[in-house]
Length: 105
Image (cartoon, rainbow, N blue to C red):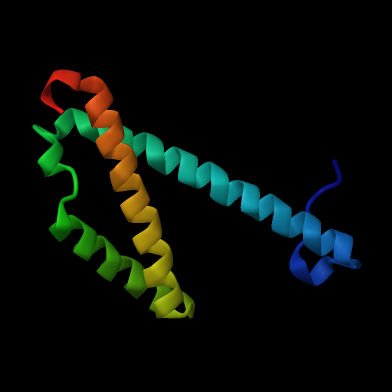
């Protein structure tokens, strides 16, 4: 595999695509790692109703919007993106919690 070029060093569309593919893979791997933390959090949840934690979700979204502003990203895009990520992860955590506590579901 050829070394990844910086965007400014790319000399072809194939170089650009290789860079995009590389970073998309990193995003996927980061989401996978994040989900492992989400599932690990179930050990600290006393019941399924404790999983959604709306106050934590609100605080997370506020922080991510601040990060977006600092990075020059469109806040509407980041809000939508993280709402999807967070809510999907909540559902995954619920499913995981249920698999560990079948008698309590």
